[in-house]
Image (cartoon, rainbow, N blue to C red):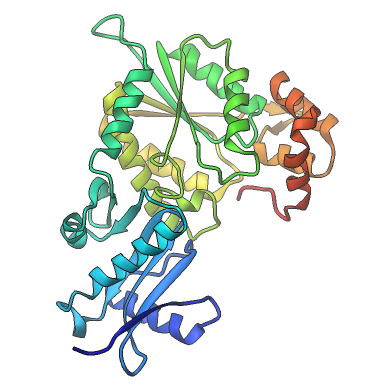
Length: 353
């Protein structure tokens, strides 16, 4: 048997990356820009004949040279990536693959969560992982008082940090619904840690009695489903991940009886604007109304978390105070916020594009 070997491909290895890109292109795949590890399998002449990559706890961007298909090379690539992931402490794994390859990954112990028809399938290595999450959401939610509970709404919120704009959206949505579900984006990919964001959302909404709060886990706007939310990305990639995130959300909505999703009007973030446009087009097909709420303004300008982060970065807490609920302001005035404020000051760009 030929002697092939697998090795990491580093960002400075431009020639090898070009071979990886050609191999992926032959399979109709573009190399995802959101990658933190790429490997390649080489033949005796140092040609790339197979490749695969990781981003956080996901596996993606697989390809095998057509002249070597049927030799079990993809199995070796996947085994290498799983070993690498376990080495850095990631046991719960997710992957994207083309529809035509999903059965292959099923044989390797991955289970389908959702798919975007004609584009990709989203899978994980836990048989009941997503179902357990759905069961948890149902357990956290009150049972409907009658067979026709009326409007049940949902909001997905990162709140980095929680502002008067976020509060306005939730209060307006809750006033229109018999029950409102708030999905708090729980991945720690924001400047304000999730533990803080969660606490500020819970404290700031304690007076909204028909609000039920859930952690989003790895299934809603996470680096697994929607990495472009956290990293700048091409519009086409952002759109693809948005469709996947929506496919996941529709299954959640079916479990909880959600028939309306609220989003804030978006004028500054290109990624979020694309996401909102896709939601407005696709959610109604699943029986879910998509309602866009105009942003609350202060001083004639829309309130945004980006604006607050800029003010905090520049030490202008007094100006930020007008944009924040009392609990959020109290946090940033406390010594507890010192590490977050220092991180903001050291971050170059704190605006979410």
